[in-house]
Image 1 (cartoon, rainbow, N blue to C red):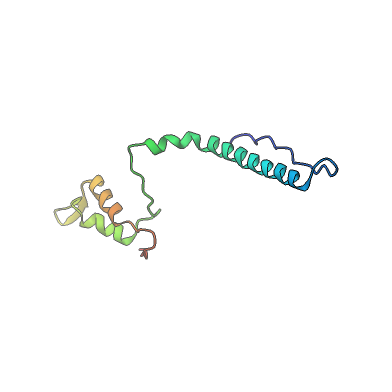
Image 2: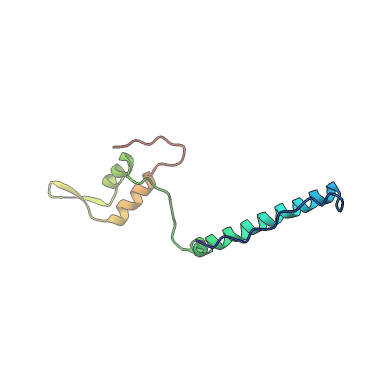
Length: 113
């Protein structure tokens, strides 16, 4: 976590020395400076993860526990073969690809086993 940014001084009303519009301008400048400071702090916070956007790996969001459809897709894929009387998965890569293809998409109903 980064250190707290220095707080900017609040603009103060200088009754006899500034007009209301001058105070508004100063307050708006203060607000812009605050937003700029917060943006810089956020950029510094996420900078260590910027490399991920250039990564060759594809990332997808999947459920913590596979859905019934995902498990069924793995067993029905080319990743599974019978060895004697038992069906076994011989290729985790193929099984994973089948499961990802069957993973729920946003807005779709999900069944749980």
